[in-house]
Length: 196
Picture 1 (cartoon, rainbow, N blue to C red):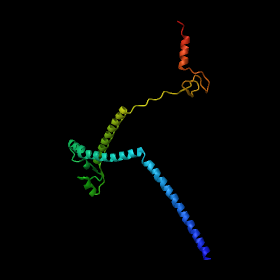
Picture 2 (picture 1 turned 90 degrees about the vertical axis):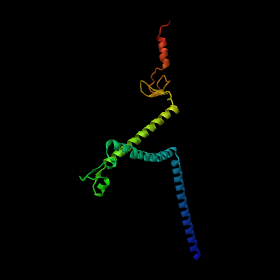
Picture 3 (picture 1 turned 120 degrees about the vertical axis):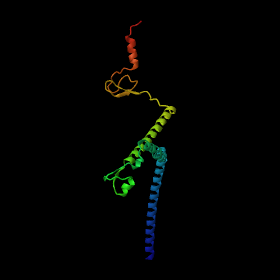
């Protein structure tokens, strides 16, 4: 009796083991396929170019922010006579505060138009520099990359039924109309000219 029960237990164990192996093998295949697809996706040229662009863009953003905060804004401060653009704000509770921090400490809501002006100047500098860079790249491309000439057209429209036919066709296969080609026009002109 024990041997039959032991055999059943062993049989169940083997079946469970086989099912687990099958499950883990399917899981392994799915993960492997997903990683292969990700590898194909990640190593495409456009993705790598985009990643490089994002990294360079982040560094460029820091440079532009420093340019605006450390060079442009102090010059605008001298021209406009305002001490700091960051301190240009309107307190919405009607009170007057010397700084944004003082208004925040008092619990007043503020409309920070000085920071907004700084952000607009940031944007304009970034947009101008990107425009200049793209313009230079297109000039370089036009100079070094030859333009591909468009092939001559291989089809034309039938003047009667307006379907596309081969450029050298003298008769439309759809409406069977006689179509004048350059050769037939030359023959007609030669026939119509009086002999010399």
